[in-house]
Length: 204
Image (cartoon, rainbow, N blue to C red; front, side, top):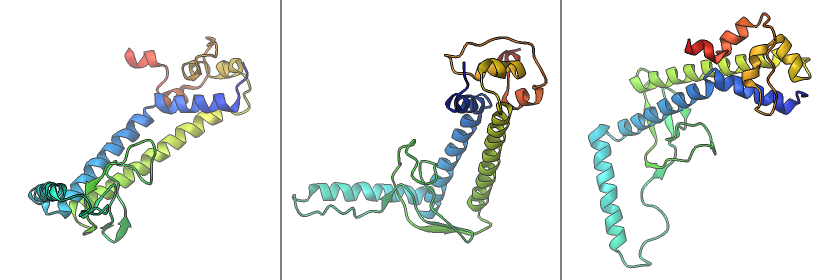
């Protein structure tokens, strides 16, 4: 079967999945979720302060609900948003409570009571932010390295048979509709180790 650009992209994506990149990215996102919540709580005076704010908000909701129709407006009296402004040691950022950057349609927005705040450069949460940024950079570089390496391995190859001649373990990465042919192995050990192929080696 001819290896179209679309099939090659599927193979590259499968290689990233096999190497565990999406799982690492999700773990990093969840760390950002916890960090953003920690910053929010800290900005409200710690756990007790945040709980007091939540309690006050519930009281406000109860009061406004009891008012006659038409007395209240459509504008919310409380700042409830999916992100907030933060000066983190002199760096202006807008953390999102769902752990993403920008408006990521793959993850639903999480809205919470919040306010603009700042962290000193030596604050533990500011230090954690820089660690998250470094980990995100390293993970991005890892993804790019794997994707570029797999793309290079397929460069100039036009069919599945040609690919399997030079990289038989790539059969695991091919779409199901492509017949997987077992052929003698060649020197692709480094690429296999990078991705984690073959799977049965991990189970051994």
